[in-house]
Every structure is written in C-alpha cells, then in structure tokens.
Length: 158
Image (cartoon, rainbow, N blue to C red):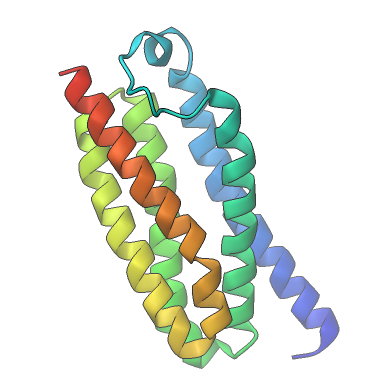
C-alpha cells in the first residue's frame, strides 16, 4: 500500500471511529444530566472526568488497529472488519440504551453482545495482524469493566 493510500485509509478509520464516538457521545449528553447524577452507583465508580480521556485513547487504538488490519489487504481482512464495524454500531447503541433511553437493564444485555463482538473482532484481527489484536485488549478490558459497572448500577437502581 502506498504511503498516500495508507494515510487516506488511516483517516477513514479515524473518521469512522470518530463518527461512532460522536453518536454515542450525543446520546450520553442526553442522559448525563440530572438522571445519571441521581442514580445510585458503587463506590468503585470512576469519577466522571475519567471517561473522556479513557474513551479517547480507546477510540484511537481501535482506529489504529483497524488501519493495521486494512493495510494487510481488504480481502484477508473482510470478515474481521465486518465484525469491527458491527462492534462499533453496538458501541454507539449502548449509549443510546443506557443514557438516551435510560434503560440500564437493556444496555447491560446489549453490552454483553458488544463484549462478545469485541473479543471475536480481536480474535479475527489476530489472524491478520497480531499487533492490531493486542491493541484491542485495553478496549476489551474497559468494556468488561463497563459491563460490571452497568450491571451494578442497574441492580442498585432496580
């Protein structure tokens, strides 16, 4: 892949991930107000300021991982990238379920699907680029943590 094409592919990966982040971020802004602040949360809930920097780093890693896979060629990466885009949709959908619709129970169920899709994406990425798969490990860990947090908030708030 030429360097110009590689930069273009990286820009597309960053733009695609940024679009998913923006959709999720908009939904988050709908519910972060009074509703979220009134929820009972566990003592181990991170402070609000942690989420922005963590998600920014994770989205950058996700885009870079997709770019690494794409640089290996579209044909070999097609199944892995299809699942990557599915998990991006699930990622944005979680914010709409939890914050937009204020449905922590449904959000938790959806988050389990997101976790499964993300782990499977990493497995498929590993076949194309082991480095890309490892770049998804922090994301997988954060989604698992978010799942525990989502479940706990759901249970605390019945």
